[in-house]
Image 1 (spheres, helix red, strand yellow):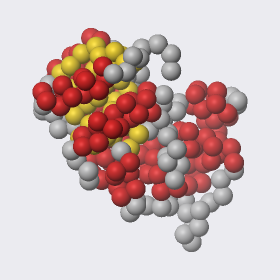
Image 2 (cartoon, rainbow, N blue to C red):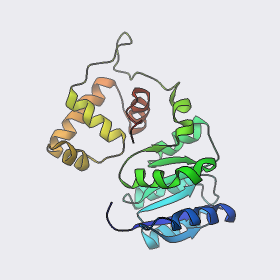
Image 3 (cartoon, helix red, strand yellow):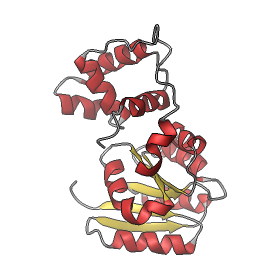
Image 4 (spheres, rainbow, N blue to C red):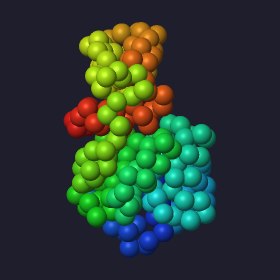
Length: 218
């Protein structure tokens, strides 16, 4: 990663903000460009600063972190979002993924995992806190609507490679560059793959990828 990663912190607990600020200050390539203690303040600062990434508390008010994430995705899709939360249950994680966030980190493991989580998200990956990833996905559907007799449809090697990278958060253009193929080819492999698996949304693809172990190396 070249250059500085410009970051906004948003949390309604001053002590948490202070701790996050200290963690970021230890990384030479991270630059804190704004702080917020409410959803409305976070949106205002993000619109003004246009950071590379925002670390966002899910439980803020006016509006909450999920609503802020959706607004960011609509207005500033280039801004990556890393959710920070106390919540460990699947419902919150699913909401976050549906809102298009790039990462979901527990506050209790922030001291250890904040920096690697930011680096994973900023490079296009999907980060789910290791403490909850397996438990949250273990009862997720292991098959899409396209599965027959409980068997997994055979994906070609290229279709699987494309779907893995898409599930990890890479754009079609980035997938094409990584695999050395054209963007239209990527779109074709992606379309064929999700059709075989019976998957309709990115969230469904991410759940499937987690069950298959495709996200374990990001």
